[in-house]
Image 1 (cartoon, rainbow, N blue to C red):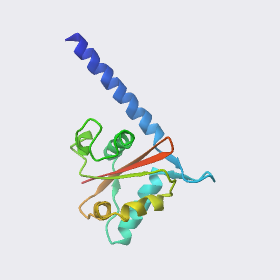
Image 2 (tube, rainbow, N blue to C red; image 1 turned 90 degrees about the vertical axis):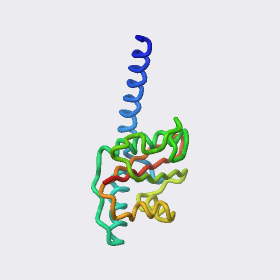
Image 3 (cartoon, helix red, strand yellow; image 1 turned 120 degrees about the horizontal axis):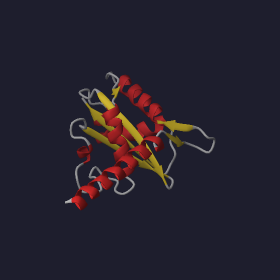
Length: 156
């Protein structure tokens, strides 16, 4: 029994370290050799500009959704899918706040407009972005070995 509790504590500690690492690792990406940077804030602003250009309200930032997006962005390096690496569905990071998910992966460094425009070019991703029922969003990105992973989580 003690071994099981100890193992659970170790797993929780590893997950906490992963989340903390993710929070400090996801904010900025190089978008070209001239040292410009793409930030989560820029992608969030671009998302809302696009929504407003189609007559939809801007989404509010949600820290809980950001935390979920941060977890998912790191998971994508193992499995680029709406299924998590452990086989569970994407929304199981936090079933209480996650209602829609957009994923993006690229080896090309894009600016915020380029990232959002790629989502808009896909009908299913565009449908989530232009869903007038959503009120909140969290966005995170992760970069490893020259691959950029971006996640957008939607909520109410």
